[in-house]
Length: 111
Image (cartoon, rainbow, N blue to C red; front, side, top):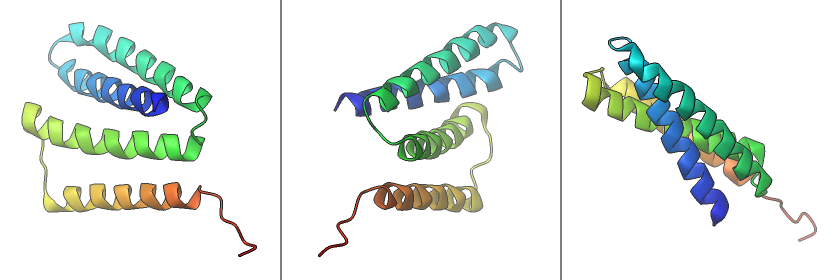
């Protein structure tokens, strides 16, 4: 259960850092949040891996969830476009992550 909490923290801090990066275009003070957010995200990813989650699964969930959250929040906060092709692309990313997740589970070939 701890690894999921670490992964959630990694996702949220990475999304915050990415949104702060966008905000820094107007106000450079946000760059502090960018640096701190990315540092915290990678620290949390390290904790997830230490808890035993496979790296492909960890990175896939982190990347897909972060992409989806960033796209939605950027549309809300900054007026960035959120079109049906963007939504479809996010859906395809999530589907790909599910394939990675299911493919990473060991199978018993003796049955």
